Image 1 (cartoon, rainbow, N blue to C red):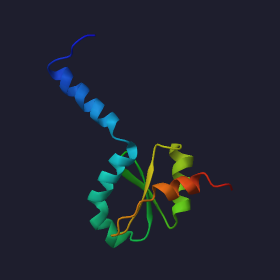
Image 2 (cartoon, one colour; image 1 turned 180 degrees about the horizontal axis):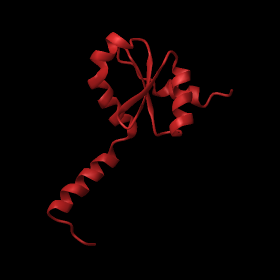
Image 3 (cartoon, rainbow, N blue to C red; image 1 turned 120 degrees about the vertical axis):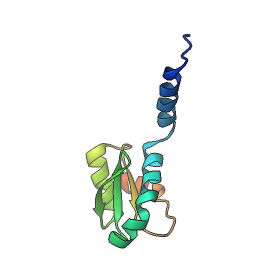
Length: 101
């Protein structure tokens, strides 16, 4: 196996670190930085996030998950509720996404 050194090592390390974190992890970190402003403009809404950006807001979790799945596929997005409470939507997103129509 070839050994990479110098600048290539830095680039490869950055690529591997990005791969090690999921889309949801990166989106959540970006969301936390935007949350203080969002609380005054979109409190109670559900934000669909893709590539660390908010792409749309919805009034319900079900609508946000439906939009995300139709637009980005099953795992290439995340949904965050704009609230000052720590809320884990993971289980509910999974349940709603897989619920029969």
